[in-house]
Length: 168
Image (cartoon, rainbow, N blue to C red; front, side):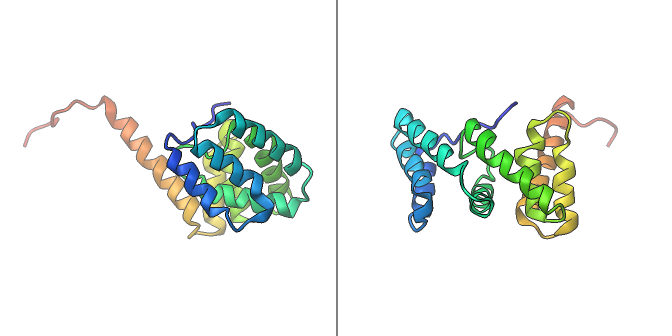
């Protein structure tokens, strides 16, 4: 499994902790981000392990709300939570959500980025496309698809010579 790296900027973690200031239920996630923003990785890891133990026992609607928040804040090239949180909380939640609501655009989008992207037997783009078929103005799916297309074009052109081919 190839996971995206976490943010380089400690300020990004501080901003995420600030966003969670009003979410009393997610104080451990806010504390994880706060500790990461201070560079305290070992303490943050300990808090995250406690969060994983607690969140794995939460009812589905509560885990789904957390998944949505993370998914809507995790739209850059780097992931805001580490791989063990993906594997133990995000992936099982999005799989359960997609099984119960296969025509939900958010469920398809999040399945595409959290499960299919890390599974060689699934094609992530199909789930992003399905999300866009369900909800053509899904901003996160549109952004992800556009970024993939730009990356594809950027990679495809890297073999082209640096000069114009053909007559003027």
